[in-house]
Length: 134
Picture (cartoon, helix red, strand yellow):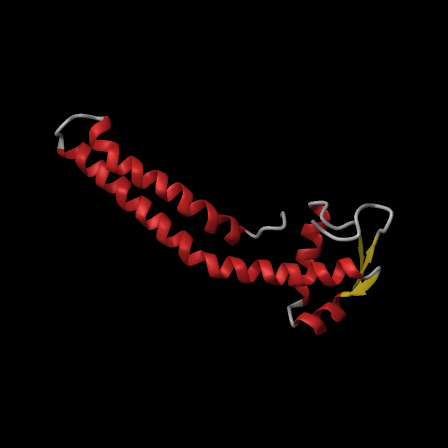
């Protein structure tokens, strides 16, 4: 719901948690000092899961940036005008009208934008908050 999309958040969190899992997987044999094959297998499994989390987080990074760029282009158009129609935004950005409506609705709920949606128009409330998003 916030400015960052889910993919963008996941691309930042997965490598972070993955690196923690890698460190935990490497230290697992020293934390639990048993030469039991189950403990060794659990440590190796945690290590592999950590590596997979790092790789998947890095793989999500470009799509998260692309998503943020789309959202930013919509917000720049909406924040600069007092009243704008969704079809005008669609003509300028080339994005789907339902996606534009979803982004504007999410930004209204998250208090990034101030105003209201009325049919095909978004009307910005200039008394409600800052003119440009943060």
